[in-house]
Length: 251
Image 1 (cartoon, rainbow, N blue to C red):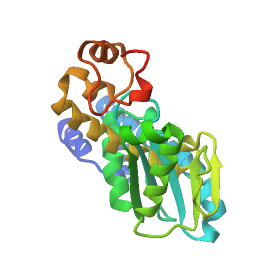
Image 2: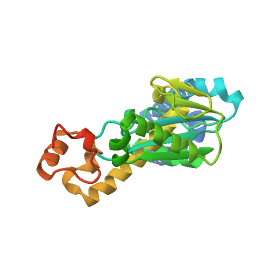
Image 3: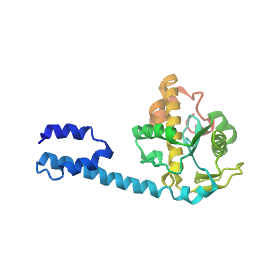
């Protein structure tokens, strides 16, 4: 009979695919330490099954329109900050996508977003991004700049979609069928994936700006109007990436 120490080592290297076999082998073991390990596996399995059901529930729109061809999710990040670009992303996921934990990027930790970003880029049929600079935002306003970034994201796709599912908006100037979905980044796997890629991409840009202009704290505030950011803006004045039309109350 294996010792509990040996079983614990086996447990620590256990993959999800081997969990059922582990339970079959040790479920009848009466030792409390082994029972505790088996209970932890059961809880993980229950949580995993719940997440699979949740993810499947977010494929309603994709399944509804898949007969048209590729369904593309679109979302943006950065409409509200005082500094930095607005960035949009378009993502086409495979029909049989099994990526778990997709959600509105704001509901995920930074570490989880980074993890999912890599998975999405690896498994997506196509990913495209678009961006409008702070100067462009000042020139045509944030709404029009957002639409422009979204059109760029669609144009950047290496594969042409047949229908767009968008987070709450209908994008002017696009002839493809569009389905605006309120709170779409929490209701559609494609929009959630676009939300995550957009967020990670923009956050990384703001981290780089922070290295050039550390006085504004861009690495932590990502350009949003935190009190520390506003204080720095008043002290140092605007940087080249501040939106002039957004900071009139502070400068």
